[in-house]
Image (cartoon, rainbow, N blue to C red):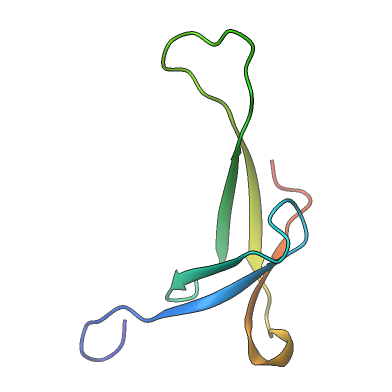
Length: 76
């Protein structure tokens, strides 16, 4: 938040992994961004879904001054 209590949003670019090149808006520069992708199920029970989870970590210095998050290949 800035001094007047409003949230500061900015565009970040995701590098690598399944969301490579995706541009997202984030608030207050979180250290980690979580991306999920739905998985297809054969005859799932009612109300059940499965999502693959991917983590992107904020890079210390974005190239060209932009905010960037790099794919964490060790993410679960």
